Length: 111
Image (tube, rainbow, N blue to C red; front, side):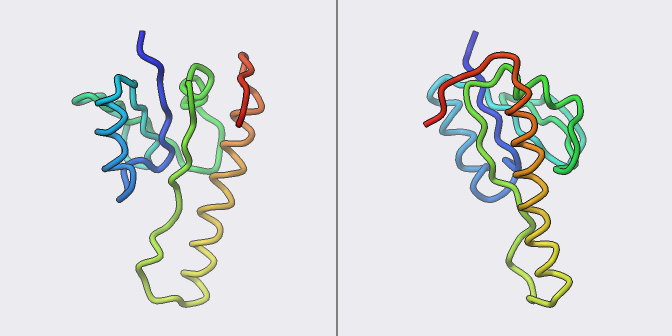
């Protein structure tokens, strides 16, 4: 069985380059995305909202690594509303990923 790597927000600019690289190194790639879940091709896309623990937790439990690439695009006019969305999208995802990692059944060494 291939070791799995969870890419939270992996459907974005960096994730689209990182996924093929990880696949070429024989990792299973699981992308947490706001889009609907699917398993077409080599990458498994799993729905999440970036705020709450849900079914995606099972993938974090078995993952070799979790990479956080989440966050609203900064390519926008920086109004107070957009600025708040940019910050919240990063803080919320880090919080919920931290909760998921803390709940892991199998502890791993973190570097």
